[in-house]
Length: 351
Ligand SMILES: [Zn+2]
Ligand SMILES: [Zn+2]
Ligand SMILES: [Zn+2]
Image 1 (cartoon, rainbow, N blue to C red):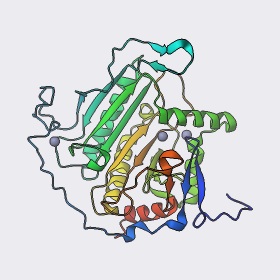
Image 2: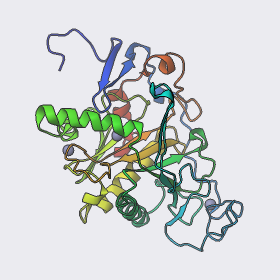
Image 3: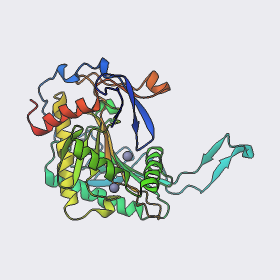
Image 4: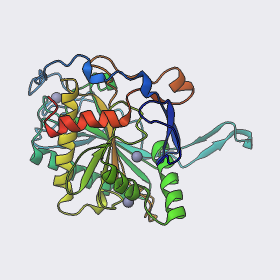
């Protein structure tokens, strides 16, 4: 890397290529103040009650639509009462005057909510491994069921955690939006993975994971099946990419030990996050799995993204504004330096 170059990745402003999307990120390491020298408050224990009578996700409570939740004991799946998508919309495309300036398409789809636990006060970081494994098995079942539908070509499982990410309810839950079209972010990754495979006849993320395992500097933690790292092109200060270490396309390819190993890695990543500033770390996370469009996708490599907004303390977040909104995303602390901090905390030696 960078042979014959005088570019210093730890000092010089530079831009890095996100090979998964073919987008660039601007890195300004000379501006970095090591963020963990900011205030770290002692780790807060959950202040939420185990049951909240006003929570629409707690067992036995009534939701906004008047439906009462069952007295569920593990995970609980239901159709979103305020779905952004509907399964029955006419298949139609609009192109006013046929000049390609006013274009619209119908988007049939399904939105579901999965409560991870009946307990209002738990998170992936504080749930037991067996309980997280039930969540993973539920994801596997949902991905298969929705992906098998002819009208569904992509299944997006995602979790928004914390008020900072707009999650209005602390009850541990995630959402699934299953759509007829492949959404923007995975569509870019599909194009990049396809192009790489065409050029090299290998998988982009298999090659990338092998390279990161050789270099080690951006690896946060790993187990037999999964690896968590701060990607070379990370935009968010403590962004993490989770990849399967062997080539699989989706949860449909999970073998027996994969769900428990994914549960363990998710618990390790989320509890490491909670140690960074001593608060429950807000984030958006989601899995990127092969499209369910009935076509083989040998290029697609199973992975998950964690996008946490916190930058310097429990209250100072990164905003994507100004140059980032109008030009290119930018970061100060290098991904290597963020990975080093996360790795120390994941090992338990960082505090
Ligand atoms: Zn609740
Ligand atoms: Zn692969
Ligand atoms: Zn992705």
